[in-house]
Length: 294
Image 1 (cartoon, rainbow, N blue to C red):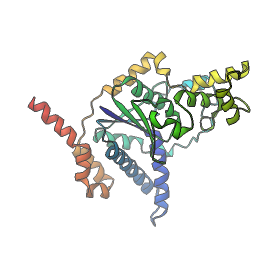
Image 2 (cartoon, rainbow, N blue to C red; image 1 turned 135 degrees about the vertical axis):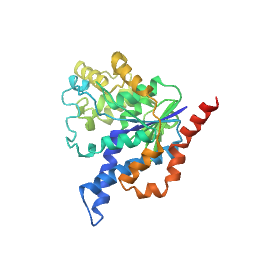
Image 3 (tube, helix red, strand yellow; image 1 turned 90 degrees about the horizontal axis):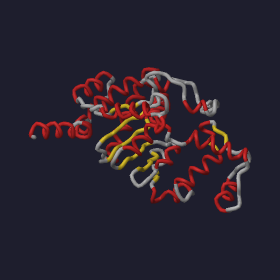
Image 4 (tube, rainbow, N blue to C red; image 1 turned 180 degrees about the horizontal axis):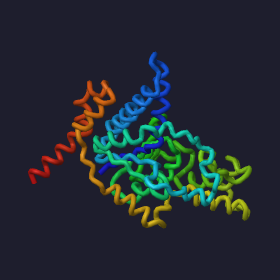
């Protein structure tokens, strides 16, 4: 059983900026065109990942919360992700994308109190079989294991247990995670230990006598608390929320999918609709016939 886990927020941001750039190359650059390109590029990316990895199941994970609750990590550090853009434009097509993905048999999973990263961790640790995470987010490196691979679709890099040191420069996941907690993460607006650079990290790992002082230990412990994707373990209702969503069976509908393609004038998809049918709908048809036969 192979599960493909797509970091939805990461993907829609990338495809949105691609859509804007592509639209500017045309003579009829409009918001509608950007929106149309955005949806198409997202679907096309999903299609390429499914072709590449041939999963038994594909899950699209989002950070969007159905019922807003404060980010629990902000209670640890109020500045957490305070540097992120507040622009919601890349999310304007969320509902349409979710609906089309649903017609393709792909379920969308959301957090309630935590973040999409925590859902990915839950799937990787609690579900059997192999997992492939599609994201450029390096936070997922902590999930790499014999059963879990991280794939960066921009750099076309695989991060696996067997090549972890070659790809990251750290001998294993534990060492990488320790270094991250020591140095912090600018992209998440989480500071590390002051003046703790590569030389200090190297010394920390190589010198048995190197010790953190009390202030440094507090910063390190805080960062472990922020970065570690295990919070669902102490929030049984949150874990159950993920489990309930993952248990929902999504039946693909080729008819509904084609209606969306007609509505949004996805000519390239319609021209190759048999390929899309074979990729997303044949397996469901085969399973239904098997159910009838049995």
